[in-house]
Length: 306
Image (cartoon, rainbow, N blue to C red; front, side):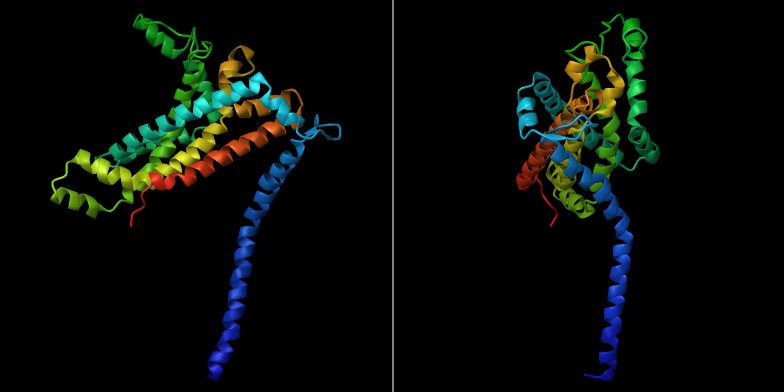
């Protein structure tokens, strides 16, 4: 072995250690933030779920009493049903709508960038602003929707006060608010599909509709899988939109009660921090089980290129 090779090895080793040091230094703020603001609160919440604590006095260990109380409480069961219904309706609707719009926006048409921007605007709008605007649109006496229905001599429903349509009314707003983000993600997936597939299909005489179902949708399934995962996790945690639209009105609460609303109510209105932590822990378990289930069955419908 030559002297030059012997000398260069320590230099390479020092350079690698230096690069590793800088890499760890750059990721340190993110790791520290995750530890302080996500991992530690999650562990603390898990510990508090086995206690009775009002936020002032020292926590008192009570074992599984909070969990037993939860499964026996009608309001918790109602909130779980509402959350599942909200998710089962809003996520597929948002994904299907976003897929159709994304396919249209993927065409080479003049001014398409403007349309893409308009669809994405609700995503960058704060949920508080969205909730306030739609709350006035849904207003029974002065809302724009009922005003238009009145001009057409059609029934003017109480969108948020009618328990039969209150949840659907909020789902419409949630889909409107989230569909833009799904469109951007699905557009990225569409643009990642190679044109050679479509060229080969055209040579074989395949119609546009057949290309959609045999090429576009199958090769888009990895993106759709990601959109479904993130959409379900987000919808199971819906809170701010509903809180803004119903405020403190307990008349509206029951048909729109969700799991996270129950966490907020127990912890910050009734100062039952241990009970609220137990609800948050059960929500975490629900999200974890659903996510594992989705990953376990992705091979049955997700097709990766190559």
